[in-house]
Length: 347
Ligand SMILES: Cc1cc2nc3c(=O)[nH]c(=O)nc-3n(C[C@H](O)[C@H](O)[C@H](O)COP(=O)(O)OP(=O)(O)OC[C@H]3O[C@@H](n4cnc5c(N)ncnc54)[C@H](O)[C@@H]3O)c2cc1C
Image (spheres, helix red, strand yellow):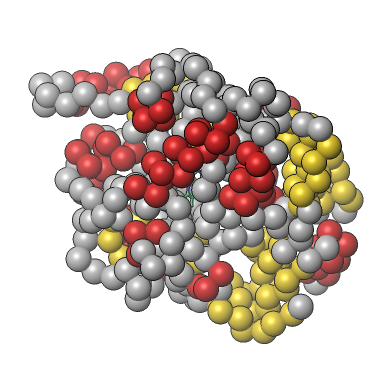
């Protein structure tokens, strides 16, 4: 289906931004590939759209083709799962739990499509898709052919992958996962908050459904499960990634907070780096839950979510994001980086 001058705001969870010059909705892999080839042959800018839950679309919209991936397919063979890119991720997770399979249960309730999950290596509550993705089938725009990438070839890291590093090259068609049949048990509970909530020690498994339901409860309490009636969920999820500081940056940060009676969360990260918490930095820099008085404010449930209270423009949201980024830099010398993909705008 092709529409001209099509509004994009309703196709995003932030519900803001301008229209697409051309919007193509594709329901089969063949249609996806044909639309990509047509846009590439015409030298037309292309934006691939899944559930629109990790996008900030500028108020001018997108002067090119937006390709909305609406393919379907949930193929389970033993513990091997293949999802079409257009499958709704949260529904697919629920179905794997119904089948008694572990591996993606802590990723319950995350909005968006299955095809986008490898793009930013979606993760929550100590689990990320990098742990269970076996292969990604994608259309390689540079080679002009369908390729199958192994887990290693996806180059997953924290909220990052080969697909995010090279955004104009791959269109994900299918994602394959290796799940586990643990006799009705979850993967080990990796996150302290979930472990506390479930009354177990980190590292222990729990009943699969108990893990799934605990995650949904915790997420709902933070406005991280979509609910059209709740403006706290009119967001793109976490707006900033947790900063990963080099040893020198971390030492400088500690020197800056010394004497302020502040203890920032700190987690070991690869290459001697330290990951700290963006939510903590934002809060301690003076931007508490609900901060802001305009049409865009922080969520009243979570300092990391920037939200549209109903009539916000992309510029309203970005003005708030810049204020917070600059405030955190001034208070802690740490540069926050946006997690959502910016379309036609910059932070
Ligand atoms: C309330 C809320 C809570 C959230 N919680 C989490 C969380 O806990 N953890 C987390 O990691 N994220 C979270 N997110 C962010 C978001 O849900 C994920 O990043 C999700 O995977 C985005 O999927 P999407 O289909 O909506 O992608 P879109 O927003 O449509 O697109 C995001 C990016 O992926 C690209 N893309 C989409 N589909 C494809 C494809 N098939 N092939 C190639 N590129 C593609 C797009 O071009 C764009 O660059 C949250 C968002 C919201 C609104």
